[in-house]
Length: 191
Image (cartoon, rainbow, N blue to C red; front, side, top):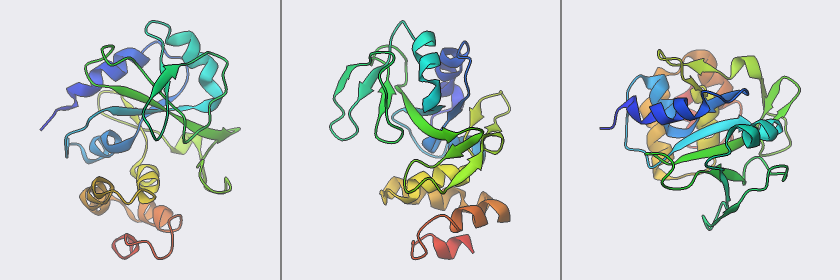
């Protein structure tokens, strides 16, 4: 199984980034579990969409590109161009890092993270969405990662849930249970 060494390029890349960032997706669940649970094809990193000017100023060589969410095609990103949290993502050229890094965009409102799907009613204070690994890597808490994964229905998302659900304390379980569909197949495990 891979080691957390694959996250070193992320820490190095974001070392000079002045905004907040979080390792997201499967790697965030691995950091929470304290072990690498499965192979990963890339590293998802979440930044606030409102900080795109900081992204543009920090990552100039190589400059990230916009990746189309369905086709995967890439095009140059013009700093200042508005991107939409959720469907739009930034990626670096394939040869820029040993493990591909994808920058996902988060919606926010003042000091709150806002789940970009739905009506913006799912929120959490920004101060509550950061966990930190022993080596100082910031990552999203599992309940937020699993909220994103609950919408996909992909086998790896269900496997990720099964791998970490027993590690969730009562507060994390309750938060997730109250924000996914009432008939979601994960509900019984969250009680």
